[in-house]
Amino acid sequence: MGLFKPYKREESAKSDPEPTTKTANKKKTVPTPTRRAAEQARRERLNPALNPKQAKARERELRTEKRTEAMVKVDAEPRRVLLRDYIDARRSISQWAMPIIMVSLAVSMFTANWGQAAMTASMYVTWALFLIIGVDIFLTWRGYKKLFAERLPNETTKGLLSFAINRSINIRRIRMPKPRVKPGDKI
Image 1 (tube, rainbow, N blue to C red):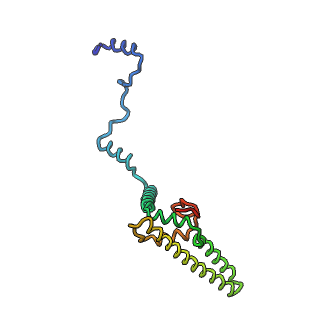
Image 2 (cartoon, helix red, strand yellow):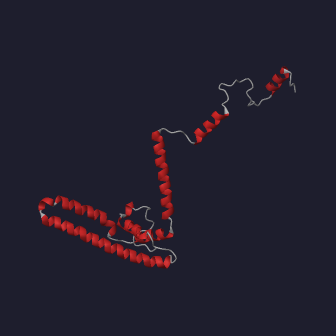
Image 3 (cartoon, rainbow, N blue to C red):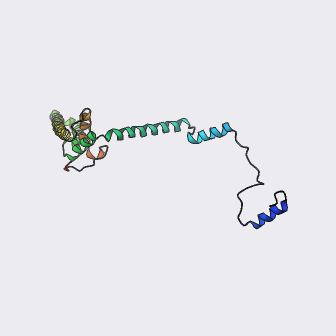
């Protein structure tokens, strides 16, 4: 074996075709870090120190993730899922409320020079639209409560009316979460 005989070690090294992974004669280029420095480096890798701009961006990202998680959790409730599907399956005038109101406001602004009659007509169109939307939301809510009583008898409808109003008056494309059913589908 030649533990203390260098010439036998050289012979065995020459006869060994596999390269060894040991680096016996290689010197260290940097000193071994102290325990405190090694722990600090490990903590830095896990939780890097950020400059103020990066810290604000990271906090904003974490808040967004937390808000998204909370929204997903709330939106997964069976009563909300049923309401979303019920509203998305209906064709109603309420989903076109915002564009119609915007057009009505634009007409009232551009017809200001035409006289009082044009502005009055625009105002009546806006109020009529509000009345139609109110009736539509009332009918939607009444129909939903019947369906709700059939499908989820032990649940409460508390807090769902405002969600129904918001979902109803939004244009279908911008509703969040995205609609799962098409208009006219049975739920």
